[in-house]
Amino acid sequence: MKITKRQLKRIIKEELLKEEMHPLDREVLEIDHNYGKSDAYSYLYDALRMVDDGDAQEAMMEFEDLEQYGYNTEELLDVFDNYPGLKDKVLEYI
Image 1 (cartoon, rainbow, N blue to C red):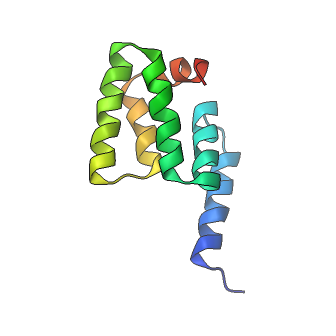
Image 2 (spheres, rainbow, N blue to C red):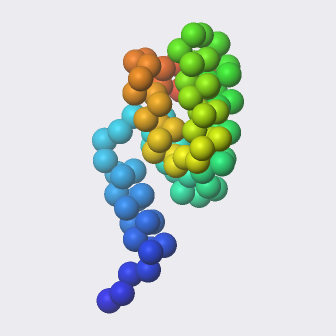
Image 3 (cartoon, rainbow, N blue to C red):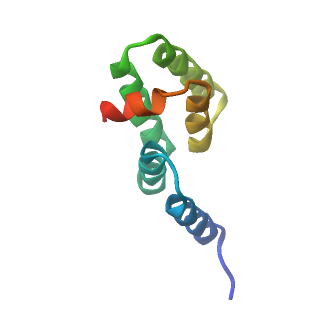
């Protein structure tokens, strides 16, 4: 049985979604899977704008840098690791 690259990506993403992860991660990866990384970026960026604190502003600047130099959705989610508690704050506004 041969698996195409697209099928492999889909299988990997489905397995990642099954793992124990933060609800924000799960939601954003679903958006990426169904609509694409630009929609995931917009979703997170808009939510960060609503949080309105220093960590959110810094994360937005990191997002802008990633957008300028190329990114994938996992890199966007990795930005949140630098700011403890920010995922929960963002989740409140979604």
